[in-house]
Every structure is written in C-alpha cells, then in structure tokens.
Amino acid sequence: MSTHTLQLIGLKGSNSVGYLAALGTLRLLAHHHPDWKPKLSWDLRTEKARLHTSHPLTKAELVESLHTALIGGPTDPSAGLTARELLRTRIEQIEVSLKQAEKDKSLTKTDLKDRKVAFNSEITKLRVRWLEHAAPHLNYGPDTKFKAPEWRAWELQAQATAHEQSFHAATLAALCSSACEDDEGLAEDTAFRTVRGAGHQHFLGIMANQLLSLAPEHITKTLFAPWVYDDPTESLSLRLDPLDDVRYALRWRNPSGDPERKKQGGMIGANALAVTGLALHPVHPRQSGLRTTGFTDIDKATTWTWPLWDIPIDIATTRSLIALAESQEDKPDHCQLSPRGVFRLYRCERFTQGKFRNFTPATAV
View 1 (spheres, rainbow, N blue to C red):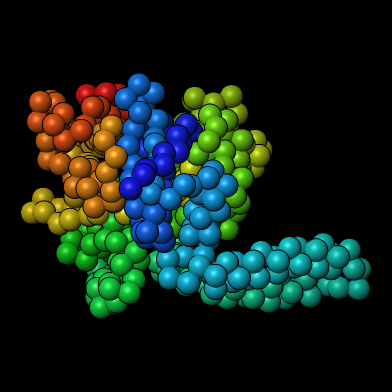
View 2 (view 1 turned 30 degrees about the horizontal axis):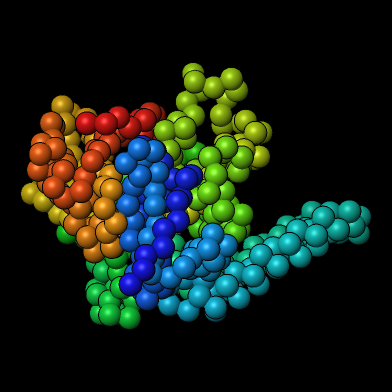
C-alpha cells in the first residue's frame, strides 16, 4: 500500500500552537476519515509537520475536510454546517436591521433596547443549536468553572454514549475531572486553561468564537505558509502561543485598548486546530491533585514538555508517545527516547501574570 505525504510547512514543532495544531489535524482525520489511515511525523531537519495518508490527499481536499470537521462536528457534519450557516446569516441580517433601527427617529431608546434583547435571545438559541453539533461542551458555560457533581453528570453521560460519541468523550476527559475538587467545590481543570472570565476573556467562549469565525482560508495559511499573524485576536486568543503574552510593559500600546487586536495578531485556524489537539492531553487525578498529560513541576515551575518524532505514527501511538514518563524528567534520557523515534523534546513554562496565564517560548531539552 502506497503512502502519500503532505508537508505542513506552517506547523513548526518548536511552536506550542503549531505542535497542537498538528495533533488536531491528525485527530480530526483519524475520526472523520479513518480509511485514509492518517499518520503524523516531523521533518528531522526543519522540525515541521508531515502528514501521511493512504489516500492521495491534495491541499484543497485537506483544508475542506478539516473545515467541515471543525464547523460541522464529529457526528453529523452536514447538519452542523447548515446550523452554522443559518447562525451567521441571521447575525448579518440582524446587524443590518439594528443599523436601520438606530436611524429610525420614531423609535425610542426603550424600543431599541427591546429589539436588541429579542435579537440577542434569537442568536443565543441559534448558537446553542449549532454548537450541539459542532462542540456540545461549549454549551456548558463560558469557562471551565463547574461544580464537581455537575461535571460528573456530563462525564457519566459521555461514558454512556462513548461508543457513538468517542470524540466528545475524549474532549471532556481533557478539560476537567470530577475526581478532584478545588476549595470552592469546582471540578479541577486542565493545565492548558489560561483565562477564566477576567477581562471578559472566557476559555470555552473563545473556543466558540474561533469556530464561528473560522473560514477555509484560515486553515490554508495555517498549514501551508509561514505564519504572519494577520487574523483578529480580540476575543479569539487562548494565550497558548508565546506571542499571546500581551503585557502592557512589552507593548507600544495598552493591549486592553489596542485597536489593532481587532485586525491582527492572531491565527484563527491554528488555534481552532490546536484546541482539537488538546484532547490528546487528558487530565488524570493524583493524590497531589489533578495532572494534565505532558505537564509536570520542575524547580517550582509548571512545565509542559512535548516530543517530536521522525517516524510516521497513527493517533493511538501518538497518544502513547505524548504520555511517556521519560519525557517529563528534569533531564530526559534521550537514549530511552531515541529508539521510539523521538529526536527532540521541547519544553516551555506556564506562568501567571495578574489574572492570566501564558506560556514561554519553548526550548529543546
């Protein structure tokens, strides 16, 4: 059986979001097109992702497949695409209607307010309907702030339907765990969570915003071109990329009011794919609390370590490789990792600045 390879030159293994986006690409294809037998590897010289399939996949076909999977959802993509198109069309219609209403001098402020309330209610219902297809967990709330019994109910529901909805079950397993509670009785959540409502930034809400904004061209420039960060970042940044560290002292303008954030600074396609890749890092309870696969504490710092490999491997093997305990050592033994195809380990630190978390640029270890 012949194998076909696509060079994903936009996905650098040394970049946290690029790495996660490659995992997300593999996961989506493994779920939606298992007959393509997708595998992932990294170029030994450039450290950029390579996608291997039994199907002679073109760039356009890959982009369309990923876009449909992200927007349509894991179980009925066609219905999801239809629901999202209805939502986007109605949003555009309402925006036009509100602009016209604001010019209508016969309407009072109360009239305008009532219309906005009615329109918001309609949009909310359409958004919920679409997300039920695309990403049901994004309807649970804007942030990963769930009482443990509440999250436990969703865990049990996912387990009961895991055969039909394994994609959704894996997503939940990487977000929170009811087995560990914090001091407020909330289910502890993933170490990838960077925001939790401060500054109107919501972890799950941003994920939904990314999917709503996602277009095929966002995926094309993520996979097949150097990143230029020319997408809007306002309400779309999950702070998983080191460039998302927008502390005031590091910027020309105050980032909270920077108008450029509405125009540039982000990569919507990369982030949408990266979110999907998070599910390959499930959380698991320990005596010391909840742990996220790939994370460990070294010298009082929270670190995330990931491997690069030059041998094409499928989704199941990728999960195992990511979870190798040897990778998490302070000084990893590459003699143990090399026979498994791992030629590089990258490590970054997660740090907290104010009420937000960010990640440092990764270094090889």
